Amino acid sequence: MKKLLTTIFLLSLFQPQVFSYDKKAKKELLKIKLPKEVVQPLESTATYKSNLLNDITDAISFEMKGKTVLMLPLIYSSKNLGPHWGLMPIMALGDSREGTVKSVIAPSYDYNSHLGDTFSYRHYLFPDEKSIFIFRGAYSENIKRDFLLSYYTPNIFGENMRLNAEVWKSADPESFFYGYGPDSDDSDKANYALYSTGGSFSVTTRFYESLYLDFTGSHYTGRIEKGVVETPVEFKDRFPADYAQSRDRKDFFTGKFSFILDNTDHPFLPKVGNFLTFSMLVSREALGSDYSYTVYSFEGKRYFKPEGGKKEKYVTAVRYLLQWQTGEDQPFYAQSVAGESTGLRMEGNGRYTGRGKFLFNIEERITVSRSPLLKFVSELEISPFLDVGTVFEEVSDLDAEDLKFGPGVSFRVLLRPQVVATAELAFGGSEGMNAIIKVGYPF
Image 1 (cartoon, rainbow, N blue to C red):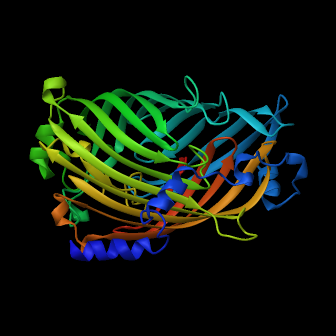
Image 2 (cartoon, rainbow, N blue to C red):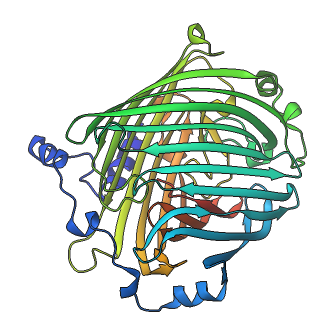
C-alpha cells in the first residue's frame, strides 16, 4: 500500500493542482470563469485555409443530393477478435454557413472471421450545442446484437438541472474472462457472450456554483453463454463456478448517489476545467436485486492548457479513478474491470477483474488542424497517452508492483458540436499492440 501511495504521488506531479489546493484556491476554483476563446464559437469555415486534412477528406468524399458523404475505411485488428475490415459512410446535416451540425448519420459494414458480417447504424441528433440524442443499432451473423437509445441535456427546467436517460439491449460476444486479480494468466482466458437488457435515468441538480448532486437509478439483467472465439478450454470448463453463477439471468436494481464538482467547458469535448466526483452505488435484494452490495468511486478529471501562444493547440487531460466494492460477490461481469473500454487500452475487454480498481490516465491532446470537414467546422487531433491501472480484492491489497503501464497514441476527428471519431494504438499489453476504433473520448 505504501508503495502505491508513493506512485500516486509521483504521478500527481504531472499537474498537482487537481487535488492539492487550499481553502482560498478552492473558493476560486468554484468560481472559475472560462477563457474567452472557449466560450466563443469556433471561427467560420470561410476563414480556414486548405490543408492536408482537407486534401485527404476530399479524396474519400463524394456529393449525394447536395450533401457531402465521407467514405471512411475500417481496417484494424482488435486484441480479442483479430482483423476487421469494412466501410463507414458518414454524413453530417446542418447549416454549413454557420459551421454547425444538427445531426450525424454513420452506418457501417464490418467483416471479422469470428463475427462474420456486421451491419451497424448510428444516428446522432443535436437539439442544441450541449444536448445529444443517440440511436445505435448493430446486427452480426454470429451472436452480436446492439440497440441503444440515449438522451442527455444539461438544461432541463433551466440551467441548474441535467438529465441523462438511456435504454439498451445487447448480446456482446467479444469479451474474455481471465480469472480474478492483477496476476490472472493470459493462458487461462475463455471467451463468452454477455446478454444484457436494461435502462437508467439520471438527474443532476446544481446547489452551489459548480457543485452538483446526482441520483441515478438503473435496472439491468445479465447472463452469459458461449462466445464466438474457440479457446483451448471452454468457459464452463475453465471457470465452472463462475459459469454456474452467470449462466442464468440475474437482476440488478441499483441507485447511485454522487457529489460532483464540475466547471468544465463542455460535457463531451472539454478543453479546460475540473470534474471531481465521489459516488456510492447501492444494490439490495430487498429492492429487487439478486445481490446486495455497495460500490464506492472517487474520480478526478482535469483539463488545462499551457500559458502563452500555444494555448489553442495543446490540451492536457488527466484522470484518476479509485473504485471498490463491499458486500456480496456478484457475477464477474458486474465487478470492476480494467481493459480496452474500461481504462487500460493496451489490453482487450475484460482483461483484469476484481472487486475494485485503480486507474491513472494522461493524454496530451494536440490540435493539428482546423478545417471544414463535411462542410462543417472540425478539428484533427493527435494524442499521445499513458494508461496506468490495476485491480484488487480489497483496498488494502493495492500495491505499486501490480500496476500495468500502457503507452499509446490516438488519432481523432472532432466534428462540432459533440462527435469524436477515434482510432487508437496502444502498446505494452500482455499480447502486444491493440487497435481500437470508436466514437467518443475515453474520459
